Length: 161
Image 1: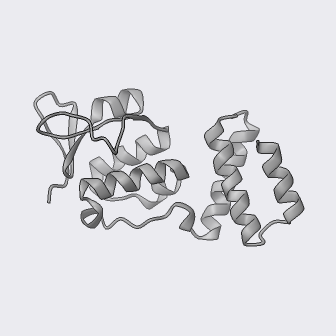
Image 2: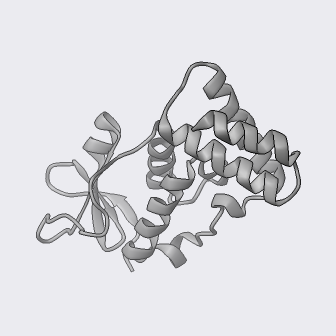
């Protein structure tokens, strides 16, 4: 099984299991672009996607260290965790990296910490849809686990819409 390593003639690509990842686009434009190594054709299930700085830093660390940095993984949004899982599974690197799902299976303390980070971003003026959606999902989780009062939780979710 192939691992992860910098390669190719142009130096723009990094071997990523069965695929290659355009490192130039990742580093300079926050674009996750995955291709087949022989044809340089795009992988249909992994379309070109603009990603957050957190996800970019995670992937760069993964490429350089060959290991999953759990602390950086916890900073990735729920939607990007889904992309990461699809990337790792389709590339065949799941066993090589000993990948463990975190996402919303994080322990409650990590989720509370993530909530505080997102809340801080919102209070600082970040009005992105992704941030609001992730905050809403965390609030739903808190409601389901009776961590917050249901009236306050539903009110906060309405404000985020």
